[in-house]
Image (tube, rainbow, N blue to C red; front, top):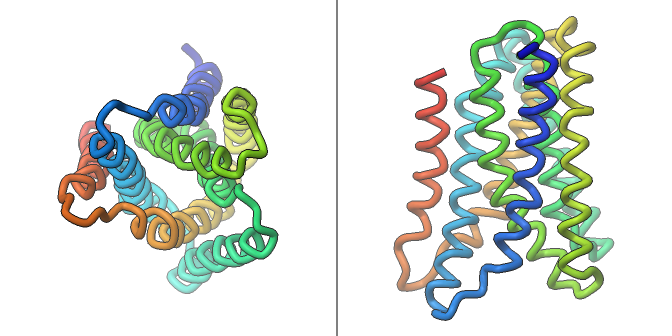
Length: 236
């Protein structure tokens, strides 16, 4: 299988994790209320753990390799500030799409990085694809619930939209493969922008929603998400 074929398949599979998460949210209602609540918070925590592993194991190490320390820091904090500005704007617009925007803002730069990594023969391409897939499931879960609560769109329409959005992954991957692979410093900056934005999103949106009074298991989802990323890193 050629690198290009692998890229298209990996980015498409990672993208399809978004509607998979939406379907999980669509059928989350279980007979036991406490089990439904635990599932919801555990899925959110799992997503946070997977996102942190992507930042710690791939995005930051790969990004800083091509940039000076000061430029790396500027890109990293710039990503956080960009996500914060976007968060503020969406709140003022009263838009139910903050989780959706964050999901795409993670997915597209990481798909570009995946394409560039495959073009350069990097050792962490499959690890990055695994991490993108793992994080897209809970992000799709959260984005579906956020949009559905607004009552403006049907569950079917949201799932179809998320499926179509999955096609953006191969497009972003091709940009990384054919363009960014020749500009490693630019790719490093994009990865650090994404890393800063992800870290902001984890502590702004995900972590505050994980905790449940008198329940102690949901944080284990974060540990499990990070652990899977760690295993992928060790075997890559």
